Length: 610
Ligand SMILES: *[C@@H]1O[C@H](CO)[C@@H](O)[C@H](O)[C@H]1NC(C)=O
Ligand SMILES: *[C@@H]1O[C@H](CO)[C@@H](O)[C@H](O)[C@H]1NC(C)=O
Ligand SMILES: *[C@@H]1O[C@H](CO)[C@@H](O)[C@H](O)[C@H]1NC(C)=O
Ligand SMILES: *[C@@H]1O[C@H](CO)[C@@H](O)[C@H](O)[C@H]1NC(C)=O
Ligand SMILES: *[C@@H]1O[C@H](CO)[C@@H](O)[C@H](O)[C@H]1NC(C)=O
Ligand SMILES: *[C@@H]1O[C@H](CO)[C@@H](O)[C@H](O)[C@H]1NC(C)=O
Image (cartoon, rainbow, N blue to C red; front, side):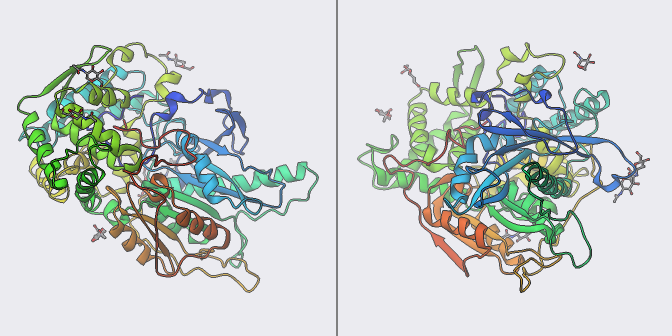
């Protein structure tokens, strides 16, 4: 799996629980075998899934005059019962985060777990539906600034590795600004030449994606009507749009993770009358995301999770945690050894040569990146992180570099030369950072006029919030420093909804959500802190909040908790949220023997993701 050149040069995902490695291990599917259509029509794909390509307007703001379109890649994990079964309860849409994350890849790793959590056996069964947002992965046109040119993409990544972390010296910020300026130019050229399918990068803001979702649920309902008619039933179709007092519109059932909580928040705030059920897990601050310098409030709990790693390691002891020593009196002893070593490695770097022959100079940034990515999913990664750090601290970086290599945080240069011309299937699996930039730069305020001094202060602020992840996190917004596309459709809030209400007949009321929103948060999340979940929940009248007593990014993505699962399933069925703040314990923790995540065909957060 290849990586997002700049964004993830440090080896960390953004606001994305998804999983780039999925595509490598799944059966290939040729999306070109499906003819894009204005009506939803599913085809078998990826063994047990159904895929469709849905044609929608490129520019929702001007859809009547402008006939340019996009073809969204839509994927469905079918319910365990047929749609004719009385327990069939419709689709739940999901978004894996990013921005720029592929729903097609996500559902293949996570769909079955999600379906199991939402379903009530014999009573409620759902289709799990996701999509590659416009411009992303298998959707077309595609945000791709280096079409057919992986070698240059890799060269940019190598340069980004070379300039070091953004807090590593006076020159790293201006160098990064230069790289992003060049990146932006390549993006303009790519669209001008059309190898990526043409105009798209100026039309990927979150309001457009939310509007796409409105259309998707209408199209799904239309398809249900056609199918039930073909079974000889007279369809009871919900109306697509209606009179002022129409309270029978198709409504969204949705679970969004990470950036998917931003998307869900936009959807609810822009289209409250289309809200059926909305679950937001791993909550991001939509105000900080959409206004001001941006992305400054994510990391408030990150360093505390790092402390928990060391204290948990000590408590688990040397038989479980490779970094622990019997002479230690607390986690602070382990941390002191680690810090002393980390502070020294940039002066005498570890060097490794990968099996493919790449030279990798391991820096403190790489080690921080590894730790940061492990903190996304402690249950799956903490013991392995300890093993790798223990070996690396003893001078053997083989395991660390192997992780970086697999995750694509060092480029696979040899492969880059073999992909040329039109996008091949292999190239489709490239994680393109520009898919994320196109969204986050359009949604946020413009930062085009900021100079290097301003950016250094920005980096400093991030590092003050988290010494572990701040420098990496700064690259996300720095990607907008020379982003050449401005959107025609942005939304800056208010991020709120009218109070949910139903009529005496139990039907939803026009213009209002059918139920309040349900927010989920881990007690400690490295990039979407509980404070953000509380702040966002407070803006939506009647919203519920579940605090899961665990570490990691997103609650249901990182630990098993029957308590959380029940609340989610009950909410989707009945629309009822817990009063006040509910707390849920988890079945086991990162240092417990045999602790894992059930129902996952593969880890959601491969270590050193990307
Ligand atoms: C709408 O699309 C038409 C046809 O492409 C174009 O001429 C016009 O400028 C567009 N209007 C806006 C507001 O983008
Ligand atoms: C959310 O972001 C806004 C705008 O940046 C900020 O004023 C507010 O304090 C943030 N809330 C939290 C809980 O971080
Ligand atoms: C951790 O490193 C120490 C010293 O380098 C080594 O003796 C020990 O075997 C390692 N522990 C594990 C579990 O690999
Ligand atoms: C370094 O670690 C790898 C496993 O990650 C192992 O195969 C190799 O033998 C080690 N090298 C040395 C010199 O100990
Ligand atoms: C890419 O595909 C298109 C349409 O199939 C074709 O016209 C074009 O020549 C191809 N470009 C390259 C570089 O192969
Ligand atoms: C959208 O873009 C067109 C030109 O492309 C411009 O005329 C129009 O005012 C823009 N609309 C908004 C809301 O910015």
